[in-house]
Image (cartoon, rainbow, N blue to C red; front, side, top):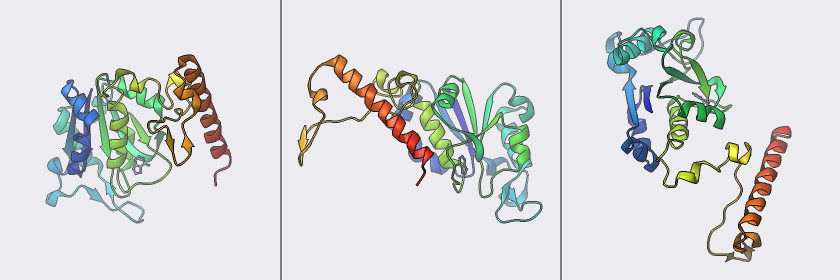
Length: 233
Ligand code: ADE
């Protein structure tokens, strides 16, 4: 997997690139690179954005700036590029990121993530250069960088060798192994703390019962989450 992130703030990714699962993935031959739109902007003074036509607050990332950055990186017309590479614009109006989409993206050989800033992208970037728009939730961030990190984090940890234990990503929240439900609760030592005890079944050493209990907890959490959706307070 080769992930290229286009951003105005490559330094924002330094902490992320140092995380264990990311360094593991890089050591296993995967790649994560940041490309700064400002380095290839055709505009003077490092300009990359502009005021929105029709008025309104904030600035919009320019289509010519993004085209220049993509052309410089891939030596191709971005309109052609997207026919052979997944190019994702991070924007609050995009398709909601979930475990199924993460699985789909983790199976790709390469991803290009486009971060917007301020008011986001000139729509022609999304329409003509991106294969899709992705949102990490129904709220607005100041930029796409955190969203790109969330997506890259979720994708990279799915790759073989990224996590310490191969099985850790299999039976986790929203995985097929748990039928899309959230994960069951975990406990560790001490078995007693302030009178709060660990569920007896987990100390029983009875694997089948542990398994059944976990499935049930996972199902209960899915129901609770569903109720939360039904009655948001
Ligand atoms: N950029 C700003 N807000 C965002 C969100 N919720 N998801 C993806 N990209 C964003």
